[in-house]
Amino acid sequence: MNLKVENVSYRLGKKVLLDNVSLSLQERERVAIIGPNGSGKSTLLRLICGLNKPTQGEVLLAGRCVHRYPRRRLAQSLAFVQQKANTEDIVRAEEAVSLGRTPWIKPFEAWSEYHQGFVEKALLQVDMQDKRHQYWHTLSGGEQQRLHIARALAQNTPFIVMDEPTNHLDIKQQLGVLSLIHHIERTMLVAVHDLNHAMRFDRVIVLKDGGVVAQGAPETLITEALIKEVFEVESRVIKSMGFASNVQLIA
Amino acid sequence: MLVKGLQGVMKSHPLLFVLVSTLTLSVFIVLGVAIGETQIDFQTVVYAVANGALGTQYPINAIDQGVVWNYRLTRTLVAACCGSALAITGLVLQSLLRNALADPYLLGISAGASTGAVLVTIAGIGAGALSMSFGALIGAILAFMFVVALAALASGRRMGNISTQVILAGIAGSQLFNALTAFVIAKSANAEQARGIMFWLLGNLSGARWQEVAMAVPVLLFGLMIVLWHSRALDAFLFGSDAAASIGIAVKRVQVVLIFSTAMMTAVMVSMVGAIGFVGLVIPHAARFLFGSSHLVLVPACAVIGAVFLIVCDIGSRTVIPGQVLPIGVVTALIGAPCFALVLIRGQRK
Image (cartoon, rainbow over all chains, first blue to last red; front, side, top):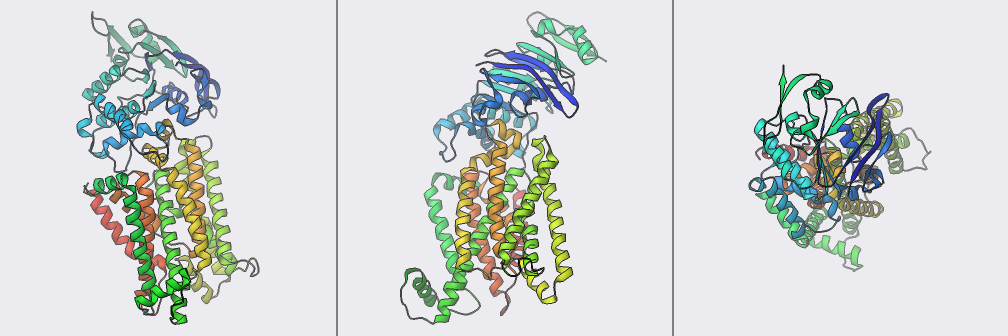
């Protein structure tokens, strides 16, 4: 199953948020999208997940436009982890994760071992089995984010799309979520804020002003010149054998 | 612990739940029929119900027979249906719009109903050919359409924003229709009419006869089925409508179906008994406190608690002041507010 974005533009009123963007994802590929604020990262992810409809062009999943999919069918192929999703309701960690089974369960179907199996596996993967009975509002931001990822895992889709999943987290939790992402064996498309995080992906797509500026393997793509051009800051990219390159920003 | 226990029992033994709730409902319906201003002993009540329902010929006073069968029983049944419908509607709106303050009247339904009722009874539209409840029903539906149209216009293409727009449009619509009602009352009502309409505006079950039962029961059952069918979809709105969409919910369709069907259910109830406040706001919160957040459990729980609550309030309204019937809306708030306060305080301790 592959995913293709073909000449997609998105306008809101007169403002052009995305301008003729094309890209494609291969199976099991981990792709990061980087770009400054307002470059269209979130908008692009929303279009890919079918939450908004492109003004022009189309997003094709397995050769079929995502807007032609029934919502349920689409959610069986593609899971989305939002930047921040919260609730005021009194729910337990495990209940939030079991929502991931929604596209697979019929309206009056009883909850079964089969569905519980996916929830268990997902909780294990994000290392939250111990806190499964804890209430949502008593968990830290990092734990909540891990549960959102677990929810996406329980959804058991070939594709997972994430919008800055490490936002609002402290450094340790950021690294935790990041290494989690690297142990998930699905096709992943992740909007990333931190360039050093992007270094750990298979491929990086750079967005600026609603268009794709460059894409390629992070080691060769992310250079001081590119960072200067896209983010308008001076930097130093430090390469060391056996480790991912490190981007140092110069104030 | 309580929450987990109750929710677990309801999920693992749905039959037990059905049994317990049927039993509870029956007990309260019997209480509603047995308790009232005129003292009627329990045996007479049973005979009267048997005479009416099974066609038996127990020799009892014709007045008692009439009071029990045509007055108290119908009134209690309508109260139960209204309580259920309002609680379910409140639950659905709170879950869909992600707003703890959403209630059945949010969409302008009660305001529209009162405008309709006032136009028929006081301004004399329809020249006596229309009943007050018909006027109220039309008013409720028109107001609802007005609010929805306004919300749709206001949200434009940003559909993700619709829940805020619905709430704002509801406030605007309610204010407009309430003002219209006040205008008509101020312009053409005499003191007697004004008092009568006030009583209706606060909720009035005294007009409930078998005709109303025949309307309320099927409407409630139909609405309940639709909402139950969507209960997993309602769960999916836990993290908002985008999250719901990404786990496979056709958000717009579910919102339209649920808002429309619960609004119609409420409109029918309001047109019969007036705008009974508080039930739709408070019962869903109480149910969540007791039964957790799964709608497969919450929906039937709200239906039962709402029904029982309104039956109890109706008994209260008929008996608190001897020789006088209080508007039921006054009783729901008087009993409901302290209960709600308790739930709020205990909910904080979690």
